[in-house]
Amino acid sequence: MDEIAVLGVGMHPWGKWGRNFTEYGVAAARDALTDADVDYADVGFVSGAVTVRCGYPGYVAGSTFARALGFTGAQLASSYSACASGATALQVARGQILSGACEVALVVGADTTPKGFLAPNEGHRPDDIDWLRFHLVGATNPVYFGLQARRRMDLYGATTDDFAMVKVKNSRHGAHNPSARFTKEYGLDDVRNSPVVSDPLRLLDICATSDGGAALVVSSMEWARDHGHRNPVRVAGISTVSPTYPDPVIDLPYLAADSLAGSTTATVGFKESIGARAYAEAGLGPDDIDVAEVYDLSSAMELDWYEQLGFCAAGDAEQLLRDGDTAIGGRLPVNPSGGLGAFGEAVPAQAIAQVCELVWQLRGTAGARQVEGAQVGITVNQGLFGHGSSVVVRR
Image: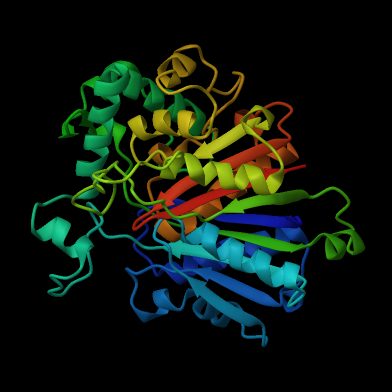
């Protein structure tokens, strides 16, 4: 797959600001344009990641951001893939650039979230599985996180202290991130003493919901070279794969897994296939990765991603963590940004924010959280209803 250049990145700090999501997206977009040294008038395509919590302007996010920045006649698109929305918006922008429809694109995602757990939109929809899981069995997102954590304990002998160690590591990273919402460093006892939310997970094991925004300015490699960007960070691979039937592992928002009766399971599981597609597009593999940003909706989930991205064999993630390999200064730092534990989740912005962090890391401008010598990075997350999301970037 041909590469595109990342010319600029920008973020509005995460928090619980209570303002219109457009404000966060516009601030991030302006920062990204400044970082890229690109005039907004040169942007031929605006790709917005949709939020479903902010009324109609959130559904047409591409247009909302373009209007707030000033309509220029640029082409627009708005994409929704739940937590994978940002990667989908980037993929759409890449397609526009590689097809020749535009040379420069702006990718933006932002959200304003309610207090507490994310919940379905209002209304009576008994044919909507996401509505049903809340109203039929009361299964908020942390219920699934707890089930997945318990599965890991049963399969591989993980302990609650292993989960707590993920939080401790990421809080140490996030303490140095000015865009993070939570910058306090936690110890094991802090996690152990926090309230149980969804057994075996405690409050500090689970990410909050947050407001925030992130943006990227991307272009063709030719346009980048012609405008003085001699060695930009490049998007080398993007994955937005779906599961393969049958998928025997229950996941958000479903109430049951696929039956294996009369069929055989896929040779590669859904979450393993997410990174595999991005690796294949980039012509790279797990051994080439220097730094990773993974979707730690819970601390236990980060351990799963180590294995699903091929960083270690199944059941070995805990040892990778205990050996310090995934901390800054280790062999393969994971979530140097602090991850979702430090940010909280601003759904359409999160996959874009992951790419922002990797761009800073590959440029060598991440400050106290810098991963030395980073040249190749990967992001991964997953959206409701089978939306995979992974981006490989390289120098």
